Length: 100
Image 1 (cartoon, rainbow, N blue to C red):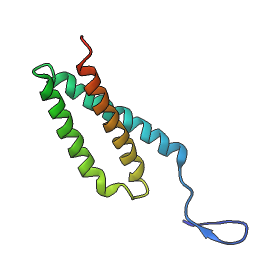
Image 2 (image 1 turned 180 degrees about the vertical axis):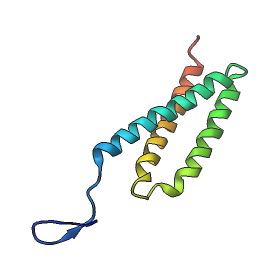
Image 3 (image 1 turned 90 degrees about the vertical axis):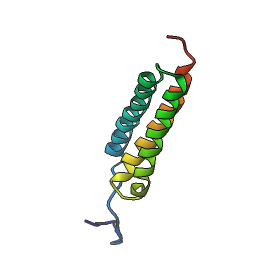
């Protein structure tokens, strides 16, 4: 569906910013929690096992989603996943050095 402005020029559909940012936020929190959880679970064996597992999962997800980053609906999912992966990697590495 195309939208026409007051001058009659046809433009593309409007960008769904509100819903897109909600989806991005949810996926960022999910992916960050996923990586921190993997690090906590596997990192109890050896700290570097946790880092290795986080890296493998993060690269696998990022590699899979790379081709979808320019599609209209999937770009929100990809952006949220990438933000979450970066936050999860950083948090997992920092949490390794905090005694618990």
